[in-house]
Length: 401
Image (cartoon, rainbow, N blue to C red):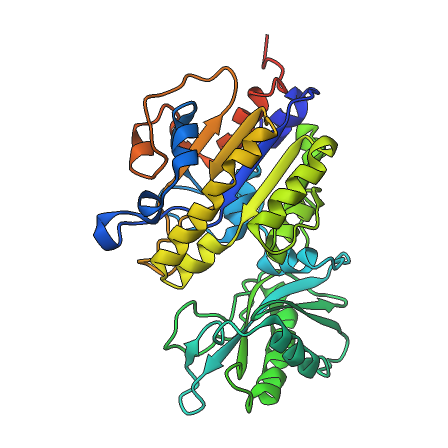
């Protein structure tokens, strides 16, 4: 029996509440002074909580596999990322409130900078242009038309946009155009099966027109497309777990992930402080709270060790406010590791803390990657987290006779 089916069968109602606090890209590697970002950060509240919890290390997808944000979060939500593959475009579209009609293909777009002479990418994020500039460029690209396809393009945030094709005969199974490193040219969209050739041709035709329109812009004189896919129609959180759930997140993609599994997405503002205010305001209405902190990941991708430390410390400072609400279960972890030394996602395990009733408190007294190696949870997977949370809130019946 698959885990989602098992959760559907075993879940029962309860009035106990779960908070899942996710610091995006939390895991790190030793940097200045030989410490990880989490070790270098002053985290008195997490460390105090650690001494009354059980901790361990969690693998986002599988050992040695570097996950994208989609698979990392789906695992946290209990959806096996090998069985539930989600294209980034779908998440971006849902994240800004767009509806995807059956058969539509959505792509996440990144404005980037290419060298006009060589055509190679010199900055994959076009200097992280502001959202206002992104909106100007999207308006410029909105004039593109293709025969037989309805095109929707919308700005998302910073250098990101979403592109949706709606029409007959569109199929999934398409490669991305971002080579994921600088010094290389954007790639063409390739079909991974014969049925997807029409879709690949359409996206390549759109890209060619986009490059012509952007060629004189600076720094965003080109764009790449990632995660071209359809909405997979996953079962909802309420169906799987019987939970009335909500998401508190500042970035559109994570709102999209939450909508994908049927969570209500609350207006959380743009800061950790406004997210905390949203948590308090919604406390009596929900059973499960997904609380997402983005900027740990952004700092890691920028290679900014100190900035990542600062975001961890800012998050630690609000732990007492979360605990004052008396959640029955509090989980603290990340979706994947983003070490500042690597400037990108990595395969390394994530420290995880579980604070709940009826736990076997271990001897670990600080919350970081190295200390958590000695924790009582041992080495688990992200998909194991939700069953543990459900069990500790008395929401699962016994399995079998």
